Structures are given as C-alpha cells and as structure tokens.
Length: 119
Image 1 (cartoon, rainbow, N blue to C red):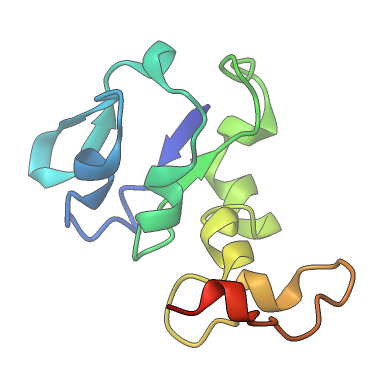
Image 2: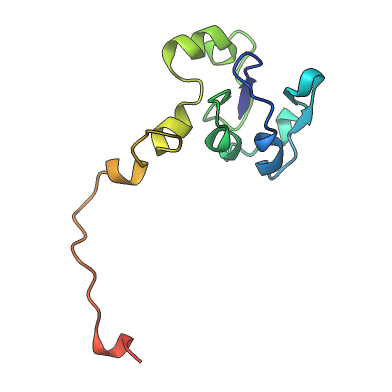
C-alpha cells in the first residue's frame, strides 16, 4: 500500500496521479501529489514504478503500515534504500539494468519456428 510521497524528491510531473488505477492521489500544495485515498490503493506499484524521481514508496501490504512503522518514515526509507526501490529492482530508469536480465530461472533456449507456424 502506498505509504510515502517524498516532497523533497518529487519533481511534480504528476505521473503517479496519471497511472494510478484507483485514483489514490490528489494534487497538493505546490503541485506535490498527496495520498488522498490510501484505502483505495491496490498495492499495484504502478506509481512507484513510473516515478522518475524515486519519490514514492509502496509497502508490500494490503493494509496501511502502522503509524509507528519505519515503513512510514521517509528518512528511514531513504537511508535504507527503500524509497523508489521497486522501480530500481525492475530496472526502470536511466542507467539501470532491466529486471528481466536479473531474473533467476531455467535457460529457455532459442525459440523454434515450426513449419505449422509459417503461412
């Protein structure tokens, strides 16, 4: 569930507002999005994945983190590298390695084209 919008990192691009499928955000003072309807968050990570400034943190929970949780503390999230970590892990952003290249799994080999697949 969305927990943090970092006003110090936000570049006011409004991409998080645009990509949120459940309209969780509203435009706040100075153009910084605010979490207006946290209970509507589906924990889809779309906002965090699309944020070009790594200014968001979505906790992997279906309910809000407790008020005293470090997952609601921006300083802790920044110091621990969790702020924007989903975007970093999937490899989105300049200079990052795409997450699919880091995936662990069996070697799939080369795709085979059979004569049945040709027109």
